Length: 161
Image 1: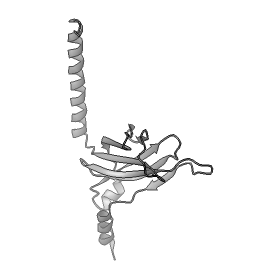
Image 2 (image 1 turned 135 degrees about the horizontal axis):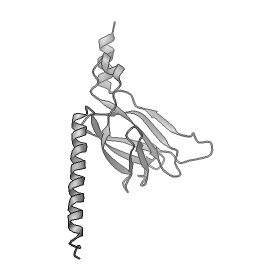
Image 3 (image 1 turned 180 degrees about the vertical axis):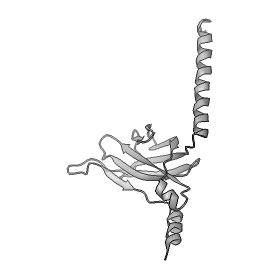
Image 4 (image 1 turned 135 degrees about the vertical axis):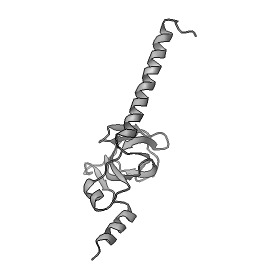
C-alpha cells in the first residue's frame, strides 16, 4: 500500500509538529517547578478479590483518566503532585498528594484523598476494593490516606515538649 506523494509532506509536517509540542510540554514540566509522580493502581471486587476490568480511574486535579485492563490494573504517569504549603512550612514534605476517584458500573464509587506520591517515582498500589451496589448502599466509599509514617514521626519529635 503506497501513500499518495502529495500526502507525504503533510504527514511529515504533522509528525514534526507533534514532536515540537511534545518537547514543549516536557520543557514546561521541567521548568515549571511542578513535580510529577506515577502510580500503578489495582482494582478488585471487595468480596471475591477478582480483578475488575473496565473500572475508570479519575485524578480530578489534573483531569487524567485511565481504565483498568483484564488484570484490574492501570498505570498512570505524569500526575501533578500537590503539596500542602502549611505542612511544608513546619517540616519539609518530601512527598506530595493527589486524589483518586474510581467508578465501575454496578459498584459503589470510591474516593481516595491525599494519596501519597513521590516525585519521579512509580508508586505500586493502592489496591482499590470496590463493593457491589446494593439497596441502602452509601453513595460513595471515602478513604483518607495518612501522611508518610517517617514524616509524621519526625513532626511529632520536632514538637514534642
